[in-house]
Length: 373
Image 1: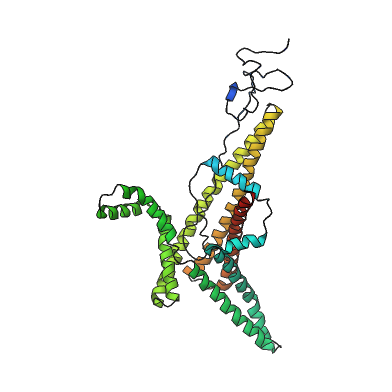
Image 2: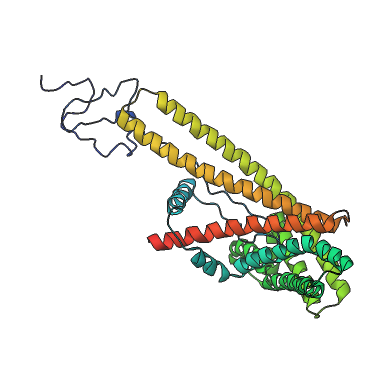
């Protein structure tokens, strides 16, 4: 007997090599180059096709244009499988060696990157002054040498920190263009059917009604921030600038709360997906499939699990940053005096480190893709 055949099975000359991922389902078979033996398609363990990835790129969009917000945390809805492949590629490219100086150079080419770097410098100075000023005062009482030099240093560092704060506000002027473009993009389809100018304006108002509230909140906050900045520049009155700044802080407060709710939902979904993939890996390890099929399926699920772990990590980073932003803005809005300077300094520095690390990782991944290509 040259070979063993089964009822309903394809002929022995038919080759199925390379069709494991072709989606032929139960009717698929396996062919060994050294033997004509074929698997029974009615077997209790037929060849399995890999499951499509359910991973989607997590969108950590933090609404608002305040100077402490991460304005690059935006995203759009895309196909889950395509995003999963992009995340897998990013994970693979993360091992590519990219010089830190090159990443920083790429970051500083953007206003958002300069904002994150300046924020890190600003709150590092604030932290130094937080511990140095009491020490300087104690030395003033004891008439220690170099007191005048230290007092001058403290004065210069305070001026530098204030200058950094103003520079960051100036860099984020016209941030309202981003939410405005989002609104006008939604209006395009309505304008195509408008027949007159009055209909066009009416369509814009209808578009505003259908715009998600967080986008409108971001638009209003960015405009209020610009008014406050123009007041600091002397172009508007101080009273107007103070009111606009307080209104922008309220917008930032509510936007941060919305961001925390969204982040919580995303972390729950991500946890469910991780448990689902881990369950599949366990079932695949216990199933009686061939070594070849089990190995490919396990490799596919392990890659998906690594992507989910990476996304979960950055979701946790985003949650920590939002929590620091909420603490910071709460002290300003509710005028909390007890420990205000210390708490705001630590919260601002922590938020700066987290937002800088997120943007740094994003630029490093982009550069790695360019280098490989």
